[in-house]
Image (cartoon, rainbow, N blue to C red):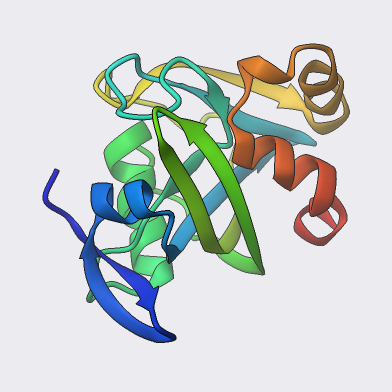
Length: 171
């Protein structure tokens, strides 16, 4: 896992190993993407092999930029790596910050650049099984209801996005 990501230590942005960032609960940069199609959002169920929140449902794609990577390049890279999506141009929508316990003694304290991308009706998906167990297209209202009915089936950040930042993200 030895990936260096941008994190703040004493108000200075420095490269820190990703797992160390989460163990220490350091404030760090992140990227989240919501791919939309005809009023529906593509969500993914995280693979069981993920080191935190395995098996939980999340937004289309979420990750951390490498130390020398722009948020847009990061969003584009992870859409390709996680889901095989190559024909989209994500558009920056909002920056939010949150802090959440993600289990196993790990904390996400993220400053997140959120992107929206519009998919065509025939956009192919090729999920990487090491990253993604399943995908689903769901209407935003239905997703909000599902999260309220069974919050523990969803990642903390998706619950926060829908509860606190929904109008800023989805307009």
